[in-house]
Amino acid sequence: MSEPVILMDNVRKIYSMGEQEVHALRGISFSVEQGEFMSIMGPSGSGKSTCMNMIGCLDRPTSGIVKIGGRETAKMTEKELAELRNKTIGFVFQQYHLLPTMTVLENVMVPLRYQGIERILRRDMALEALEKVGLSDRINHLPNELSGGQKQRVAIARATVTKPAIILADEPTGALDSSTGKAVLELFGEINSTGTTIVIVTHDPGIGASTKRCIRILDGQIQEDKIC
Image 1 (cartoon, rainbow, N blue to C red):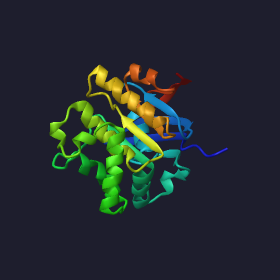
Image 2 (image 1 turned 90 degrees about the vertical axis):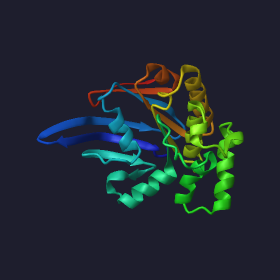
Image 3 (image 1 turned 60 degrees about the horizontal axis):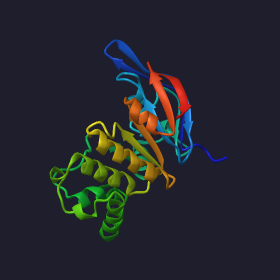
Image 4 (image 1 turned 120 degrees about the horizontal axis):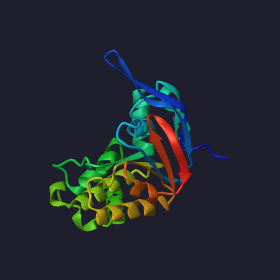
């Protein structure tokens, strides 16, 4: 049996705030197989964002084991973590994080530049990614010329252009109206159907119900892990 693409084993995270300790994660354990479509749910302060940061290699555990793509993140250098993020994980955020002075096409090409791919190939790969999200006719537009839904589709194209094993989405429909949000979730479903693992971090039960598996976190502990 192949190794899980995400593994968290008894993960604890403690933040020091002055003399006070905040226990953000209290011994969380779960694994995610390649190709799963799942959500991590919980209210503000539940620990879901800390959990996301562990999966995204943006933070290290205080104790326990986090493995992404079979590699233990606590044993990696910052350079190795950056490389793992760039090649293995695509990020989608609520506020899009598009570069305002770059065109749609240039925004999608950014992750490829960090991989050292030559410009002609970067352009072809970015065009392909934008075609898949239905934005071939917007490649020369700036982000401020797009609707919220279009911006999120650009963000998804940027996240998928490197063909990562994992897409990690943080409240990806939070800034969208319900119909546009539904369309974005359907797009995630299409991406998942090609074998990409999708993890959506959200407080919205409706989004959780749209994924195939849902983990609920409260006070830094898993309350429920079920197939939806």
